[in-house]
Amino acid sequence: MTRTADRKEAALSSGTPIAILLDPAPAAVRAARKVGARCLALASPSASPEVRQACLMADERVDVDWSDHPSLLEAIHHFADPPTRSSDRRPRASVLGFTAVGSLAAARANESLGLPGNPHAAVAYLTDKAALRDRVNRSTASPVRFERCDRVAALVPTAERVGFPCVVKPRTGSGGTDVHLLRSAADADVFSRRSAPEPALIVEEYLEGPELRVDVHSRDGRHTVLAVSRRVRPAQSPSPASPGPGTFVLTGSARGWDLPVDLGRREQARVQRLAETTLTAAGHRHGHARVEMVLTRRGPLLLEADADPGADPFPEFLAAATGHDIHALTLAGVLGRPDPGVRRSPAGYAGLRRILSADGLPPAPERVEAARAVPGVVSVDVRRRTPAPVGTDAPSVPRLSRRLPEPPGESVVLTGRIGGITGSPHITPRRPAGFPFGDTRTGPAGDTTGSQALRGRRAPAITSRVAGHDAQVAVIASGPTPGRVATALRAAEARLAPPGRLPASPHREAARAIVEAARAAYGARVGEVVAEGSRRVGAEADPRRTDRSVGISAGEPSGSRAGGDTDRGEETPLSP
Image 1 (cartoon, helix red, strand yellow):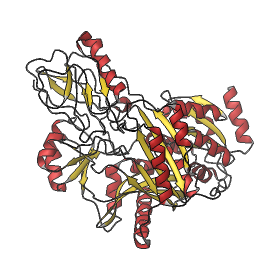
Image 2: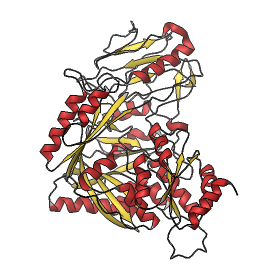
Image 3: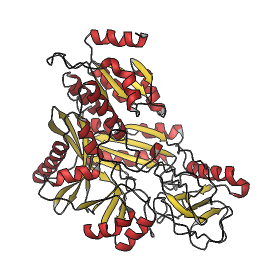
Image 4: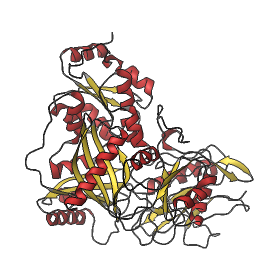
């Protein structure tokens, strides 16, 4: 037996439960200690610096590609719970994930090892929008019209049956990624020509109204609503399939959330009932879940649900207003520990805002400290997102283009056609092995592949969508009234950005990654990408283009056409 196994056996024999955490945040490690559990952190090869910091805080750390089920089982097989074990003993260990992929991997591992946790099928239902929609429709009085679509050739008739306006999106994923609004059959036709031949899509009716998020804690199948928050977002979303002036790139580019929401007793009861119905229909039994819905004229209707807390600032945001530590609640439930309760004197109201950098760079440290000093501000979290690398291995036409945002200050679309494989870091992640509802037709590392008619033959193309910004600042404020929270958030934003600077800019480094890949294949003819505020991203403007887009071209053959820029960076067809 190895030294690591000896330590595990010693921990198990002591009776202390062990939380096995997949790429945890520091808050999750602290929560494990809070409920009296030891912590084993499993760090994936792509773990962020924050995750690696959390792993240093854990009792033990193992580097393993936990997205690979056999590798995960090999790393933690010592914790397997034999079927002959007395049922009245406390759980010895449980695996927990903190993303959609992590939650699915954890559920599968728990089932394989006989450890407590959510059923694998329950997490899978919450991951697959079509499967969940089908189940919830059978349990509610106001079903949402939808159809599955696995072939782009069937998209137009599918959308016509659902009715316009409708929304098309991947069956997996969350956060509004790759959600498109189809207003007509023409929009559906445009979208189908830009999609992979065999996508895994859901087409559903467009739900109009305020968007709510319901955070729920479940223990042994009993659901308790912890909070209901309301999304604060730009007015125009989701993205249309054929963009025009004022198009926004991401449905999920929300400015933030406010908590709580005053819905009135009757509407609040309907919202809670829909959340509980959704989780019961999926079979969710343990831990945290978030149910997103739209408050329509017909009442609350399901948008999507997930078995994970989502982006990391949200647990802290929830704790600021309600006092609930959702990580500690989840760990206590699956490990048989006492409920941790709520912290003393929660503020009652809280707001979360994601402030986008004006120049693509993080704010100066003194500005961050000034924002943190604002009365009522709980935290100011600065994160810099590194774009996925872009490569090339096939001869094709490199072209970088973008649409000028209207009004200025919104996200920018950059499309680079370089060749080789398709790479798009924001497209729905690969469905992990063991998913019971079929293949998503996606490739590794979150990339979706397809072929494109190019230079008279079928050849793979590379598309890198750039939507977002290099730096993002998450500000959380709390207070006894909504007015004080709003005042604190405005003051923090003012201290983070100097007067006169626009609140958003292009994702310059991702654009440079596209250009560098093109340069590697085609030499110095490809120009440099620069950013000026958020009104113009340039390079050597393509003299053959007369529209309002700015492009880079390197040897584009006369037989190809540029095509229109896309709203979210999908491929624009080229003529043979």
